Amino acid sequence: MIYGTVIWFRNFLFDNGFISIYHPKVKAICIGNLSVGGTGKTPHTELFAKLLNKKNKSVAILSRGYGRITAGFIKVENNMSATEVGDEPLQMRQNLPANINCYVCEDRKLGIENILAIEPQINFILLDDAFQHRKVKCAYNVLLTDNQIPFYDDYFLPTGSLRDAKQSAKRADIIIVTKCDEHTNKTAIIERIKKYSSAQIVFSQIVYGDQLIHVTGGNNLNIDFVKNQKCIVFTGISNPVPFVNHLTKLTSIVKHFEYADHYYFKRSDVDNIAASYKQLPANSIIITTQKDAMRIKNLNGIKGLPIYYLPIEIDCPIPEFIME
Image (cartoon, rainbow, N blue to C red; front, side):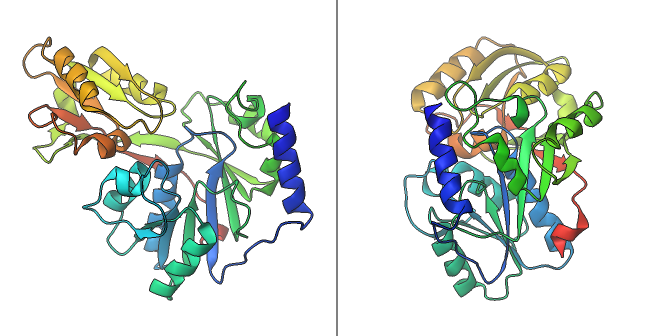
């Protein structure tokens, strides 16, 4: 009740003009959620960037850079570490074409102004995880909600995972229901969402890659390699269930080391993973997510360990109006 009251009062101040809002001189698209994580913001942001790029739009990405030890405005480069810019911005930088630049800045207004000073030709700026950052007026708001834990069935922290009110869904122009499959009851979900928002509703699903990518630059493996093999899995993401379920269909998971979202691995964690790996038969491997790979790849002790990540992409019918 206390958390909900604070959120209501904050939204009241913005809704009634008591707090000033910055109107950028460029189309800003906010991609976020109402919960604390786990809806797939990063791969969806990558999808928007790639689609805009294909339409010959000049686009940049601005993220807070959650978990970094630095501060201020930084352009993300491939050779940086997750501690410098955050794991998600670093992942996006490595997955996107070179002409799509990624930046981090905790002050979104300052970040947008700095991007426009560097790249005045920019048509779109994608604001990653900015649905609650209401000091910037976006051209479009894209709200993500997990098919497994939709916002309308969730509760405020600390009971649930909501960091914003369910009624805030009315600010969205598009609502994407993520992590869907052939069993998703789309009609029922649409009926529930329509009680909170008139936004256009679309559904997305995860598409897993067919290559396992070596974390430290070794040879990659075809996904068929893991069939009938034993492996160890480690994850430090908000909701690892879909990832682990997918791997379970492909291989035999002997042990799953599960850490908190954005967890920064220590040498002792590597030692624990390595000790379990040594108990496995030859040709066994260690699998993680790309997001986790960004945080572990520079740690001492992983050289020589067969650690691979499985990349993902998003399949989602993005409405054309948001791309114009």
